[in-house]
Image (tube, rainbow over the protein chains, first blue to last red):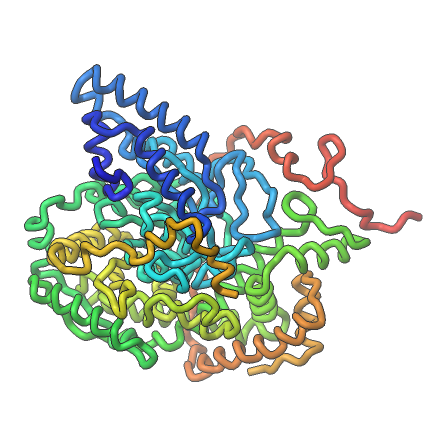
Length: 521
Length: 98
């Protein structure tokens, strides 16, 4: 086996069961890659080498026993046994750090496992460590991490997107075949697009948020990153489903079809025939880079050529999405982040009485973007402004959701749109202009407002940088979206760009390459 | 819609219990007003008869069985407290002594 890090998780599973590859070898290969590149990419906040190797050895013991017992024992092994995965550093792992990219949680140790951590353990996955992110998931570039930015492996002077930039880079740079992110306004799909991988935001309520550091509770969802649709489906299947500890997690059944995406390209392509796809004209907007628009329109044309029926459609309230989101999300954030009081856990700064301690702790513990959002949210919820801002935004949210509902009622299977209007932008380019940064999420945040599932899949390059195609579906249609994603992979399997790896992996591996923070400065 | 004055910014910072520097207050005054300008677009929409959406899934009144279940161990929870005394978290006095 030449380089184990290039394998998809579904390939690893086959090799692990046959005994051609051990879980220890897989963990070692990925840990080595992560450790080798981290100075230059800064995808990881912690790499848990000893624990990951220990867990991989335990997995290998399970494989040995099962192989000795025969085929049926091998089939009963957990789905992701021995597969390395990366977690965004807002997922609780008992005893481990969980900073959410913030100084205010530096030194905090999670007292329990998140629901999805429990599920990943049950599935046998090997957690390699925790990845970098915008502080409290507020940002679109991972530059708002209190621990320094992450670089894009396609161009080290560019951002990976955000807020789940570390998890996206970990998968794009072959440090893990799978990773977990969260998506409140695009924080999985946008970095997936900018790093050239698959990233899915499931339907709100599909995955339990228990043990996930909260940002905006009516919008936050946990989801998978992977390098193909099948792997994304397998990871989603492992973590999805009702959990009594998150009352917003849904009892809707998690379909096993997430595990049954066709392996064969012919079968996958055939599933595109007769699909009804809508192309919302409002997503092809002024300010969109011509190269991005070209790639997305080409992708839609390929889907059409493969038998999908594509109609231009309208989501008339799209232009109101940004303002609505940037009222609702900060309002919910300002309430959620009130818990960081410096009393029970996390950073504490003493400056006199209780009030002085709050001001000092929160003033020094939160970064600029988090403070900005807390200020916005507090203002939008404050006496005299609640109706004009928060209530108004909640009403417009109804209209935005209604736009999508009308299309599902017309029988569309999914919508196709760009994930991001631009390719990865240079480090620092949007840091001094919050509104420019907020606009990065214009194509993704309406999906969160409506609670829908969406997936970004790679559809080629513009100026040498990845472009993402976004597929948006009706509630609970994740498996159908991944069928479309898998179909698109099949019909573009021979495309030149499919064989390209991120252009600056060699530079990332060079110990002389400076850190992303040094480049940004 | 409204414009935020410097005093408004200070008031909101106090409501949010954020200790901000003079530089931060100045920066936020201009940035927050620029962001509030973006909200202006919402006044184009008539929403008097539109019901607000607070959540998107059709789940209501989710209750659990009223049974006693183990909670996290006290030691695990208090392990993160910046200052503790036995099973208590130490905080500054809130009421004046009389």
